[in-house]
Length: 358
Ligand SMILES: Cc1cc2nc3c(=O)[nH]c(=O)nc-3n(C[C@H](O)[C@H](O)[C@H](O)COP(=O)(O)O)c2cc1C
Image 1 (cartoon, rainbow, N blue to C red):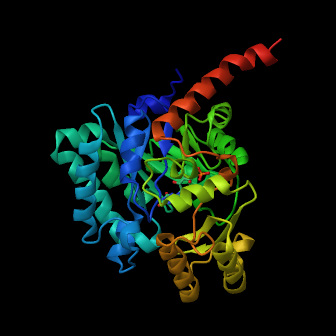
Image 2 (tube, rainbow, N blue to C red; image 1 turned 45 degrees about the horizontal axis):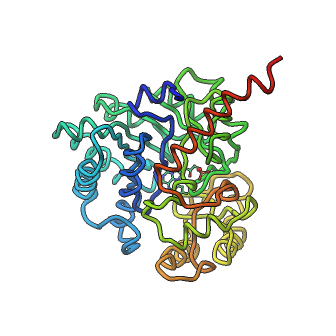
Image 3 (cartoon, rainbow, N blue to C red; image 1 turned 180 degrees about the horizontal axis):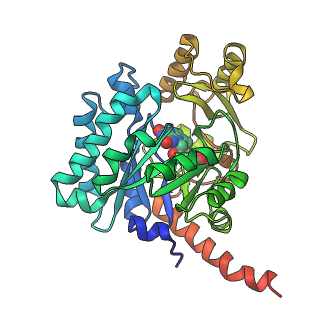
């Protein structure tokens, strides 16, 4: 049995977190992951986009007032989760989403305060894509364990100042939203671990027992996985996406501009075109220079590729995905996956001293 500080802090059996994966729904996935003893996470950026008038149809959560929508989702998800299961909420706190983020955080805090079952199972809030400091006064008194995602040592130090309980150091090989100034997990995780006293979770590139052990060796207390969890049976993602992950090799990803900054996509016709368009219009993205200007043509191309997820052409649809897609070759249930990762990690930890210590 692998037990780390993360297991104690979140009251979970295995030191594994399912990353937030908006703007898509992850409600069913969150329940499956929580029931299997890891932290299942509800994604909320789709709620925000819908409230801004960006309609992703059935791909995103229902529309309406973000506060009410999230409270409803929390209640439904908690009800479907077994007694021991633990759920978290991911709220992106980037500048584009600030107003709605306030409502979402308030919804999580209120839902928890109102109902003992929600209080028991809704354990964590994972803020990402922005500055943690403005959130201390709202999140700290709520009783939620607070995790924040960072791409750098500088951002990790701000988390410590803000009073974040767990820092998620997210390497640039990860799927979806990535940093403007790229650093990958192998360098980022130990650098963050050395710079702060707060426990650190690694994200970006994790998929199996070997990579979990690597994260622990680098000083982390667990891993957060996105791409690996998309390719599971219960994940609320279209089948074409899961199969595209299985089909992709380790070189089959590409970075392009999306609504919330640079995004890592699985490589296909649509993402290569989006990257070419980004190179032409926002070259700063490829120079590691943050550029907040939003280009309408890029945004409409992104929306078109997202809506194509509802069709059956896997060259036209835009799929977020990390380099780790190249290490994924099956679509197990969340429980099979989590139990396999832990089994492999235990085996490696048992065998390594025999193999290497003289
Ligand atoms: C489909 C998809 C959507 C994502 N959306 C979000 C999001 O809404 N908020 C967030 O903080 N991170 C988001 N991420 C990042 C994940 O939470 C996670 O940190 C990342 O996938 C880890 O890297 P990996 O893909 O190599 O496992 C997304 C990732 C994917 C693959």
